[in-house]
Structure formats: structure tokens, C-alpha cells
Image (cartoon, rainbow, N blue to C red; front, side):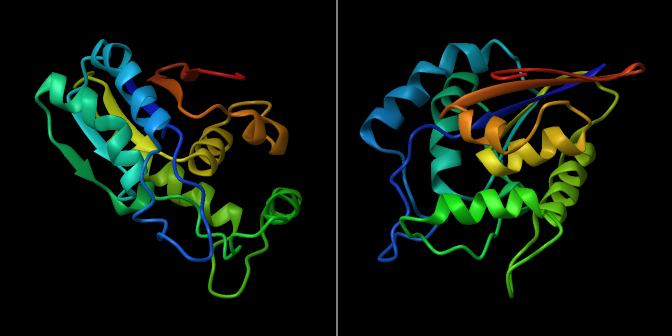
Amino acid sequence: MFSIVLVRHAQSVPPTPAGPSDYQRPLTKPGKAQATGLTDQLADVRPSAIVSSPYLRAVQTLEPAARLLGLPICIDERLREWDSGIAPAPDYERHYEESWARPQRARPGAESLNELTERAVGALIDMTDSAGQPVLVGSHGTFISRALLGLGCSGINWDFHRAMPMPAVYRLDFGDSGIHAVGPGL
């Protein structure tokens, strides 16, 4: 059996047209406290590695546990959030909902939700090995939702995605009988 523990980042500064960019959006002060509050739970996983999206908010969420464990945070570009092509705007949620209803569609120069699903599943499958030690993975809500969907978890839809807390921790156990997932809303 092999395990991956997926961590959705803690509360971050909301996106705005003026920035900072998705790569540079940090955690808020309450988000930093949430990340610190996850330290023991994440350290109890006893991961062999910690891998994160390159986005600052995902890295900052894992930093307290990484310090405690004495492990570096490795960056994997494939763990980044969905490149939706949706600009920060008051009606962004409507556009997200439409994308969930038509996951094969992509905005010009952006990624469809189906493409995100393929990227997410591929990245996670590449992390599995037979050594049996868990890997701690820091990422984002849409990435995690689409990864769970692509790995065959039931009930993953727009409502599940909207209800996912920030932060959220999901444990995926890969075994001979398939994948068993545990976390909020599952």
C-alpha cells in the first residue's frame, strides 16, 4: 500500500485584477495560523517526501510541518491550480460552475477541467512507489477535486468543490483493491 496526503492550502489573500499573481498570493494572517495548526496532523503522516505546487500559498501551508520534520519542500509545477482563463471578478463563481457543467471546454489559451484532471491524476500516479512511505502533497481546491474525480471517488462535483474547506486534508491509500480516499465531504 502507498499513501498520498493531499493538502489544500490554508486561507490566502483573494485574487484581484491588481495582483499579486497566482504564484505570489500568500496566506493571510489567519491562514498562517491554520497552517501552523496543521503541523502535528501532517507530521503524524511521517512522509518520505513533501511536494508542493509552486504557488506561495501552497508552500506556506506546508512549511511548518516541513520544518518540524526536517524535510525540504520539493516543487512540482504539475501540482499548480487550474489554469482556468477566468479573470478575478465578482461573477467568477458563475464561470466556474459553467466549467464544471462542461469540463471538456477550455477558454482560449487556458486549460479545460478535463485537462486538469489528466494532469492531476498523472502527477499523483507518478508519485506512487512500492516503498510504502506516504508523500505529503500541497495543492489547491480545483486540483484536488479533479484529482479525486479522476481517481474514481464518487460524489465529486461542483457542490463538493464549493464546500471544500480551506485548508483541507485528504488521504489517498493506493492498494491492490483500488484507491481508498478519506477527507472532508467524502
